[in-house]
Image (cartoon, rainbow, N blue to C red; front, side, top):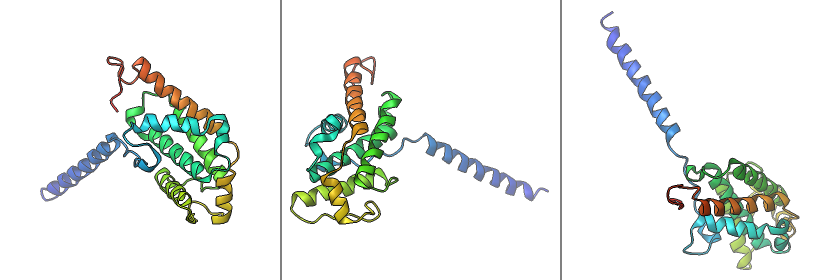
Length: 198
């Protein structure tokens, strides 16, 4: 009996360590999305810039994107980053929950319009769309990975050229830009200062 106690104690300690490490993992903030520097102007605060640009991209249901495949790729890439960031980064949890929900619906709409795989990780979607836009701007043939664009290059490029309307993305990006601006005006990030920490 005396020989089993140390073993039992060691097992209990090991279990406790595993449980504590699991709790620490749950408390840790989720990693932020890689910043899409190629999709934003230099020397700007990325969240606010992305929100303003996305609202402009998808205004009037994204009518300005029709016939502009590189701009469409960049716009959807920014939307992917903005959606993932507001959905996962705890720094922005002060925004109304409906903003992130609406953006997720807008991103899903954009993926459907472009024929993208619905569950593509946002960071991958942003990276692929950035490279597609860069290739089109350079006059090169863009690469459409089958894991993201299963319809193939020809059909995928056609969809970028004529993606159709983006009503949900238009609503969602407008809401996001307004919510961020309102939080800035009203001190919604840090009520004592009226200024966000990001």
